[in-house]
Figure 1 (tube, rainbow, N blue to C red):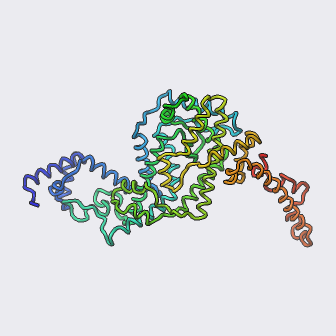
Figure 2 (cartoon, rainbow, N blue to C red; figure 1 turned 180 degrees about the vertical axis):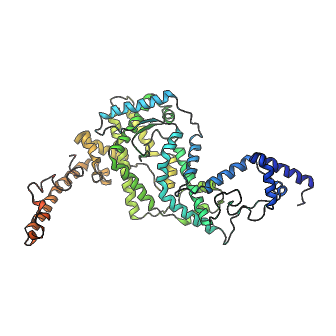
Figure 3 (cartoon, helix red, strand yellow; figure 1 turned 60 degrees about the horizontal axis):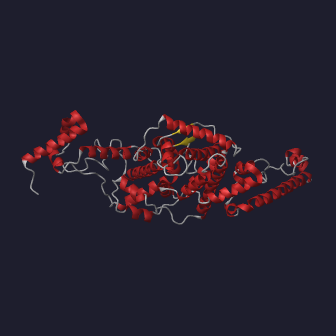
Length: 517
């Protein structure tokens, strides 16, 4: 290649100055002087073919934001937030009108009145919201970040290991550009003025930070996509709000109602019933929230990362391109394909719990809607099929945490709650939630008709155990040598009149299996 002619060098430097003026304004000449003082050749740099200044500025800003923000966990929440907002508005997210807000809040109010006749659980007591897609993202993203954090920590470490192994020994991670002295930008562009606060990080730290950014992109993309599909804050069956409250997303509700035979008002009221029923359950059965989220966390923490599969997926990916990494990881297949027995048991408990939540909401909503909505049966079936099929955002979260937040057996759970209500009324049906020990299990979903008989058998066996324990304690009291050792301070209380009678034992109260008969 022939060297640049003097005229070409002047033109190249002029092009560079124009680009720097767009980036730095009046400080362009100052930047040029600093470049020359540090050994840069502006003409050679410009002659290499300068990209569009706006693209350069955007790319540098993205790299700086993703790598220079330390974050406080395995998910870069800033990246997740920014991308989720971008995806949420990609198909339009107009501000809600006063009429939309009024219609949504009125529907939630009416739903509470109808539910009062269908369940003994009172209203959640929280505020009634009408949110845009962006507002939904802002309110629920912290819950999604926490949901995927356990597996994100393992993924970040695994990704750092795989990417480091792909690099030749002693490889310098510096970014080089024509006309710049070797190493001027430092590791991954962290020297001089480009990387800002990244100086001093070793490659392992940078790769973990890159993994955190990639997971933030995954979470943001999934949450943003989900914001275009959900009707409220409880669609996935896991509580996403920090406290009580009900939500409708009018834009999504209206889009769903288009083309249906049912009037838009009926659709809105039916969806409001489902949202309010979920909110009542999460607000007034406080252990349900901890139970569900605890199972998700327990399952996620036990996930193993298939390093061979991960290496295969990122083998041809440029480590400096976080979006390419995100697309590679979105394919799934990097989680351990052979779950442990403990994992299988946790997954079964989680799927059962999600099905029970969905089944109870499905049954209660139907009971509340039937007297008021002519299309209640059709809307119920449509929502059942939609919930069972899931969508692209739920598939993305399946690749993120290795499980699907879909209740596969919600129909069986709804049938079980219907049978319990037929035998014991709404009070008996709702009493199933009195304690985690009362929750039906997989065998009950297999045979809903036999659930009450099994519960009755448990309740008749339980007092016998209490009586046997009372007799044991009484025998201990009568044993020689026990009186001087403490008298009434020992087990003597168990021999008081009435002990051992059904319902007086230590498990009397909400956890007594026979309560709902």
